[in-house]
Amino acid sequence: MQYVKKYFRKKSYEKESLSFLCIATVSNRELFVRLLICLSFAGLLLYKYIDKLNGLTELRLSIPLLERELKDIQEENLERQYAIDCFESPLHLMELARKPEFGHLKYPSIDTIILLPEARLEEDSPD
Image (cartoon, rainbow, N blue to C red):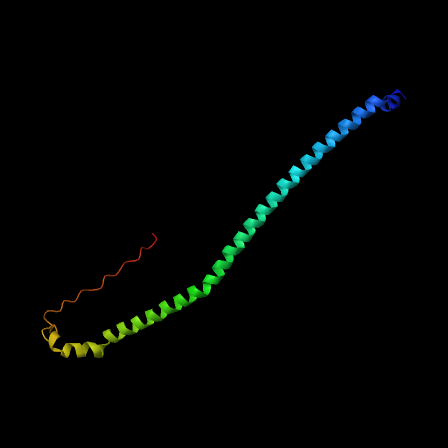
């Protein structure tokens, strides 16, 4: 009973209500700060996510360009390989041998040809 009387005294009631208001304002401020921090963090995460998506989109857009470049390089390699094959063909080499600028080149005679035996690697047997 004394507790109830004490609670309803005017002075103590005013003090508690004032302290309650101060706590509520601090809580509102604290809540606002927490909310602001959470929203800032969420905004930062959203920014990073969109930035990664932009990077991924850039890579996706560059794929067709790189495919075209690769196709051009492969075609160029085929053209060069064809030119090499044509140059190294026996018919073309025989034509070059008949030209006057290569007239000083002669076929080697059988006496000057040195045959070397093929080196064979012996397999290591597990002993």
